[in-house]
Amino acid sequence: MKITGYHCLRTYRDWGRPVGDVNGFIDSGLTEVPIVVIETDEGITGVGLGSDYGVDDIFPAIEGADPRAVTALYDRMLAHVFKAGHGGATFGGIGTLDAALWDLKAKIAGEPLWRLLGAGDRFVPGYASGLDIALGDEELAALYGSMAERGFTAGKLKGGRDVDADIRRLGIIAEQLAANTARPALMLDSNESWNLKQAVRYVTAIEARLDLTWIEEPLRRWDAAGHARLSSSIRAAVATGENLTGLEQYTPLFDNRAVDIVQAGAVWGVTHFLRVAYAAHSRTLPISPVGLTANPAVGHAAASVPNHLSAEVQSLDAPVGVTIDEHYADGGIVLGDEPGAGVTIDERAIAADQRSAPWITAAGPHVRSQRAGLRLVAEDPGEVIR
Image 1 (cartoon, rainbow, N blue to C red):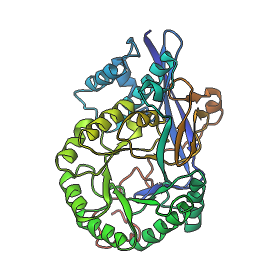
Image 2: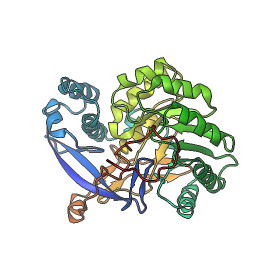
Image 3: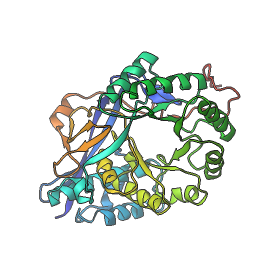
């Protein structure tokens, strides 16, 4: 069998609510979903969700190859962009092609991906995460109430600007999840918006009132020394890593004992997740994939590693024209039996319902605030660009 071609599609997800974080939010609740389909000479196709950035330039690295050699092809893609480097957005294109290759490999074997990867159980423990910074308190309660109905016992709030508001809103999440446990796990994600001492003061204030399970991305992703100092200064675990593009970028965090919960972004693909998971396992650290809505295949990989802690569940619905063989129950993801990653694409439905829904807008969460980490007070009355 040989890889003969590929094609890209664009659909969108309707979240049904504004989504974002401390850096900004998408008020419409519509976001784009790129899809890459790898074609073979035997008619079997592999589907990857995530990013199509740079795919035209990366694809020649795998064209004509046997798609079953997934890990070798992953390294071939990294080598193909050697001079320019694989970091950043290029890593997203590699990750989506990688997810499509794993989907293909499992389809060829006639097995669901979780089984092919060696998992013994189709259940993936998860936590609720609403990308919820723009929601009012009543909307927040309703969202986490719906997650509680599916058995979730842990929730993550987007915050980092108003400590009193974050304490109140974490309490709202706890009230909803208390239907399933007397002590819900509560996490706060500040999306790299603080400097070190801001983080210490902010988390300490929360911990005076609540038991915080982890603080996520408190500092810039590369600040290993700062994360290490923060971890030793607070009770909560420090979680980070979702924006690191390559296993080598984790080395400073590991060497400095700067991370307590190792995270990997689902958008970066299956092979990346597996390598990070085993590197973390060698250091007796748990792994937690972020954003499985962007790449469902990583949920299958999470089921297969020995140190998986909990996976981020941001939405219970699939993008337009996409069907995913999984459901949510008992506080996690129950993977299905369809061969591959369980993703089915209806190209006609996608073509019939096209909407422009970019993540990267000036007011959105993918654009960093200019004064992040450089404020004397947490509240932002509105940034002025001069």
